[in-house]
Image (cartoon, rainbow, N blue to C red; front, side):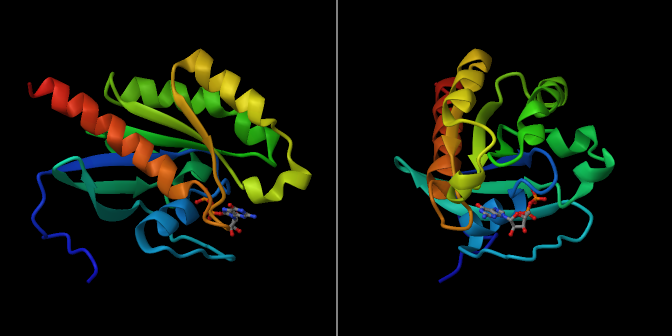
Length: 182
Ligand code: GDP
């Protein structure tokens, strides 16, 4: 049976997707939330949400994930998008160098508006398009190491590592939250 927003859970967490337009954010989210992929995705403008219940250890966590739904194109993301977010998937497209070069800008924004201990996972998406790769896997790893964040390459199209990227973020958030409540 599909999860209902009103199902019992131990706690709710908010996480955001961020990165340049066209890198695959909304398809990563629809894979994670509904196991769907859209070839001609044209999201409506305005924030989109999805949620999924995840069991981590003995806790049932409701992960509420926010997607920009195209607003980044107009630099229209406001601080309320980041408010209260405990985690972020910072996404670039391995076939588009510009989306990698813009990571610094997105990190700056995340750190300016987000929680200071926000868990950030860097995601190099479209790994199925290796033949037109413009950013090496090693480059992604080195960037993430320097910034002290996690890194993973994914393919929303082939459903590779998508679950893993979200789960890595959610598990880390859970670790931090549990330590705080000790
Ligand atoms: P967003 O603007 O960041 O939300 O990106 P979208 O999810 O709308 O995806 C932009 C385009 O990239 C769409 O045409 C998708 O079909 C395509 N796309 C997204 N993820 C992948 C992927 O993993 N592999 C490939 N080959 N295409 C993808």
